Image 1 (tube, rainbow, N blue to C red):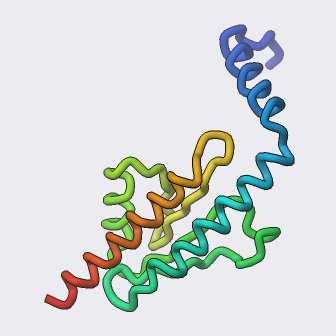
Image 2: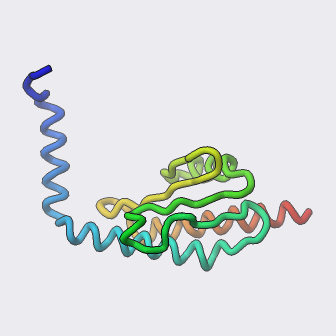
Length: 134
């Protein structure tokens, strides 16, 4: 089917492209890689819990192979953790049967938000570990 594009859709699209052009793709890729690496480092150092949710990053370690997302394998109660994260306002993706994907968006996410996500994840894992010990 051929037709003219809808005007209002194209206005929004044009505005979006202007934002990307203003920021610059090289800068966005650089920030994206930095944010994803920062998140990976935080999860690896702050969420080393052997019980509780038992999480593990399964995305390739190479930044060239993984892009801007991290896939987190949740070995116990993954959907419960996913629900807690979304209820706390984090936009994450659930992949059955037990993977949560997170992807900082460099155009509108901040390093502070990445830190808050990792801190929340660490807190959830810690409290789940405590509950398992009771």
